[in-house]
Every structure is written in C-alpha cells, then in structure tokens.
Image (tube, rainbow, N blue to C red; front, side, top):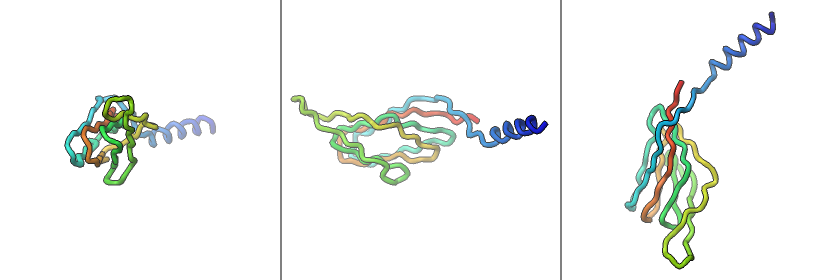
Length: 121
C-alpha cells in the first residue's frame, strides 16, 4: 500500500512542476544593413533558439535585455577577395518570452538565424 501511495504522489508531484513542451513554429532570419542598433523582442508564449550569427565586419556586439551577451568576432578573408567570413558559433542561445535581442556595430550587413518555438502547456 505504501508503494502505491508513493507512486501516486510521485506522479502528481511531477505533473505539478511540469514546464510545458516546445512546438516548432517558424525559422526567422533577422537582418539589418543600416548603421543603427535594431532590437527584436521575443513574443509572449514563444521561445527563440539563436542558432547562428553573421556580420560583414570584424566584430559585432550582441545584447540580450540591454546587457552585453557576447562579442561575435568575424575574421578577414585573405583569399584574394575582400570581405569577411563567419566563424563557427560555440553553441545555441535560448531566449525566453519578453527577452530583447539587440546588436551594435558600425558595419554593413549583420544577421541572426533563429528558430521560434511555441510553448505548449
């Protein structure tokens, strides 16, 4: 009898603290070519997974909620053609609903590759 009650309370306890599931919604390609500090906000009920960052410059400051999250460092191409190439990203970054993604650089094109998920209870 104790084992049955323990099992029932365990199942109820796990169910109470469940966080919900993620459901794929869309792929986002956020880009900007002007020399400004554009910001994007994660909508309510959504989660963003930032997969990659690119910049046509030597570096890009990336901000989350107006705090410097990381500096993305590009590298100059020495292959005889002018331009920059993208370094490999270390890992994805998860942004919950309400987070503000921003960047700052006086460079040309920069972009973010993001997967958006719905939070399903």
